[in-house]
Length: 117
Image (cartoon, rainbow, N blue to C red; front, side, top):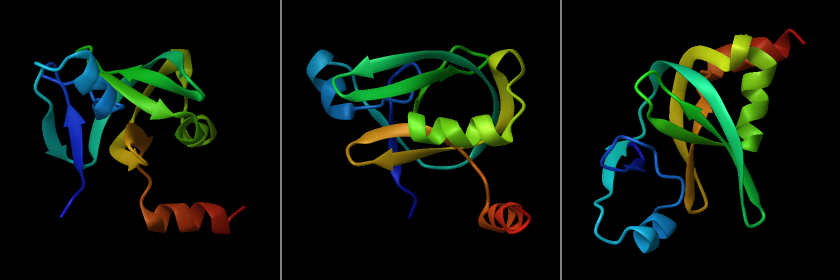
């Protein structure tokens, strides 16, 4: 069974559901399976919360997707980031109690890429 990923009522991926519940206790959190999807995303900005820093991406409809900085490195290494816009396959992931978007690279493609380096 796929991991369940939290989204708000507007379709934005929620980075920290515990903080979201504290900030907006009456706003429902909708859970969706962590399934990969293809989208064109525009790089937003970096945000620092305590000791944690992450970046944001926006899709063509304005939905927000946070991304861990460690996952940004794969995007920078493998994608053409022309004008901060990337069309690729993405998948939401969970780390500790936070959620973010990750570039989807299947295992076979990843093995082939690193075997050639």
